Image 1 (spheres, rainbow, N blue to C red):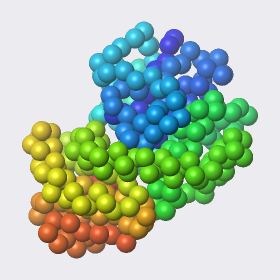
Image 2: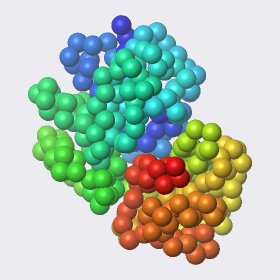
Image 3: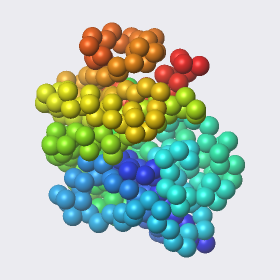
Amino acid sequence: MKILVTPKVNPDLDGTSCALAYADLLRKTGKDAEGVIFGNPQSEVQYFIQKHSIEIPIRPDGFTSNWSEFILVDASSMKGMPKAVRPEKVIEIIDHRAGEPEKEFPNAKIQNELIGAAATLVVERFIKANLNPNPEYAKLLYGAIYHNTLNFIATNTSYRDRKAAQFLEKEYGLNENLARQMFDFATQTIERNPRQALEDDAKEFGEGYLIGAYQLIVWGSEVFQQKELIEQTIKELFKKFKVNWALLNVVDLESKKTTIYCSDKVGQDALNKTLGCQFEDNWCQLEKAWLRKQIMPLLTKALG
């Protein structure tokens, strides 16, 4: 039985690292598993491909092979999943966000814990098995923990995330300079082409009533010099994906603040209710760093 381990299409570093590292762990324990990424990996993943020459198996969505079972990582619903995945054949889920995956995947063993990074859960599995990940995958996991906890300043950061990062530092000689270089590379990539970054990151939430939610994580605020381009891109994505309204979440790791763009009155009212956003010219700033995966469950609940 060949197992595909995979995240959502166009994955971030958390999903990418989990797919490759967990498939590595399964192989080390005698399973026939393959980690594959579909679509266009996001900018922080490109850093490891270009600067560390890490080979990542990337396939176009629609590609398939002789997989008979599936494991989802950094994901717990079929929305955004590769076309190859068959929900009735999903045997396991590793995720870290609010949701009810048992409704879609009745045959799956589920680990879904509200911590900073799914990568932390995978590192913990290596520790429990008394095994170490491939050194290249260790770098990906380390970067993913930093990226998903926003350099350990996100409100969803847990002591387990820090402990997992410390384990990788001790075993592989990694340090926070790797994370800083990753953030700098990703920021420069976003600033060169914010339109592409937004489209690659595009996600929709809801059933029937759809909310477009886009996110950029940067170090430094130069991206805000391109506000007009960003606003125009959000409008274009609004039409392309046929959502009811949309928001953009920008996290600046230098200032440790979140900035949100939303041009819809319903959206602004809901964001004000959930996060205390005070909008001016469709933009607002929060004094803490919030991730989209934290904002959207609150927003969905507020909207009923």
